[in-house]
Structure formats: structure tokens, C-alpha cells
Length: 197
Image (cartoon, rainbow, N blue to C red):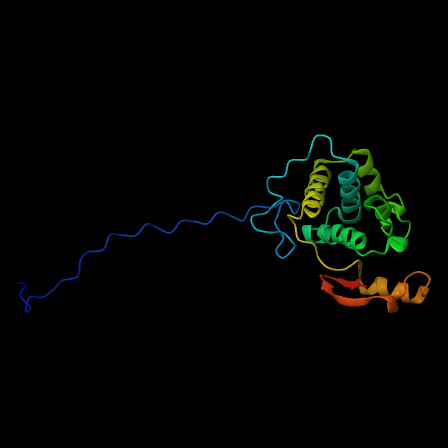
């Protein structure tokens, strides 16, 4: 039995290691960085995406509009464009938008980059990109397009996304261009106001 009057001495503690220096933060390519709350599930369904060697016309068209409208932007913006295409397809408003993915994308009043045959749209259609960063952005757009079509990336709501500046301009142009009385504002994503029927 231990002697209760015996004094207990503290045990020696092993010396601690000197603090390690933290490495400086690494630069992250914005096209590769995950964006929180962008409709992506965990784990990131885009992380291991390998583009198909010969994508079908539907995937190519869908990728082209996403890339040309939002190249250089984050995943959230690309998901927003892709969602608007699919939400228009599901809206049952074929007379207004078109009844297929291709018709919706090529609707002359729908996507600026497509209807104006922008440089980014020309790059996407031709597959000729000015640099490696643009090629990576296109691959990322294809991964998002594929994920949205397969349902591995969650869509965001709404068929229309406008900045405050765009809303002001559209309202000046009148109902013939866009009738805001036909839609309701269903929220905001970043600097965009989201509208739906």
C-alpha cells in the first residue's frame, strides 16, 4: 500500500520541438479552386473529371454556352449559366425558349456570347484556345456541363440572371425586350438577381 504522506514529485516533461515555420501560401489557379456553395456536392465531382474523347453534340453545345458566357469566372457562375439552360428546358415554355437544349442555347434572345458569336464562343466551337488557362477553363466548363446533365451537380433556381445595371437597362427598353411583370425575383446569387416564372 502506498504511503499517503509520501510527497509526489512532478514527472519531467520531454522538451518540445521548436515551432515549425509555416510554408507560404501557395498560389491556387482559380479554375481549379473549389468554390463553396456552388451547387457542388462533396466530394467535388469535378476533381477527377476526364473529358470524353468524342463528346456528343448535346454535351459540346452545353459546354460551349457555359464556357463562352462565363470563362474566367468561378464554378458558381458557370453552374448558374448551365442551370438557366436546364431550367428553361424544364419550364415547359417551348414557344419562348425552345424545346431542346440546342434550341434554347441558340435562341437569338437567350445567351449573348452565342447570339453575338463572341470570341469565347468561337474558341469553344473551334476548340482552338489561346493558352493553357483557357483550355483548362473549357475542361472545367465541360465537367460542370456533364455534372449538371448527370445530376451530380445541383442546379440553382431561376431562368434569368441580371445585375442591377442590366435590369435598369432592360426596364428602359420596355416590355418588348423583357417583361419583368411576367417573372418574380426569387433571390440573389453574387451580384446577380435571379428571376423565375
